[in-house]
Amino acid sequence: MNKQIYLIGDVHGCYDTLIALIAQLPENAELIFCGDLIDRGPKSKQVINFVRENGHYCVMGNHEDMMIQFCESSYNSSHWFKNGGRACFNNYDNDDELMFDVQWIKNLPRLIILNDYVDKMGRSLVVSHAPVVDYLDYYLHIREKIENNEYTEYELIEFEHTIANSEELMIWNRNIPKKENTKYFNVFGHTPINSFIFDKDRNYTIDPKNITESGIVVDILKGYANIDTGACYKSDCYSKYSGRLTALEFPSMKVFQQENIDVYE
Image (cartoon, rainbow, N blue to C red; front, side):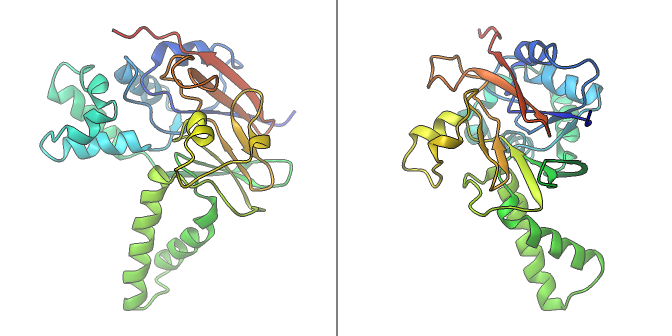
């Protein structure tokens, strides 16, 4: 049997829901989190502690980025708090506790490529918070040139600008992949499925046939799966696709889900 890894969508502080989901997975399953561990749900601090103490893989999400910006801008709360940050902030008793977690978060990668895990088409697993595969090849090409000192002074300025923009997209991009991909299979979260379906004014639209019965979005030809099923929302808040935390077994593509059982004050 092929070795499997389990990718977990945006937890958003729903610690009890996370533990219930993990109880459905095989014992000692290898886990990797798609970012947005924090905010909105009631137990962000416990989620961070769980991931850190168990040494699980995790990429940075846009909510972790907002937390960092908040702490590095003298607690300018407006943007983070408007996006669920207050629930996370209230988990902490003092600044030292908060900054301890922020320092760990700052070291999270924005991208993880796992060449040991490939799908049926031979594509390596790529994990990010937001979609990356449309520009990933060029990003990796530039990184390689910089590492090998293969650039002119002018090129270096352009390369550094491209890298900065690409790494911003890794946590904020809301455009779904448009090209067929033969090298990578990208698993990400970031945008709840209901937003893809109902928000017609956004930059992304999906083919309804790519919405699975479990509510995740999978496009095999383009090589991606969005597994953010709005775990922090109760099931009747937005749509039938909200209120569940999802784990995707890769490369089998088996889906595990847990309804939100966290208690909100």
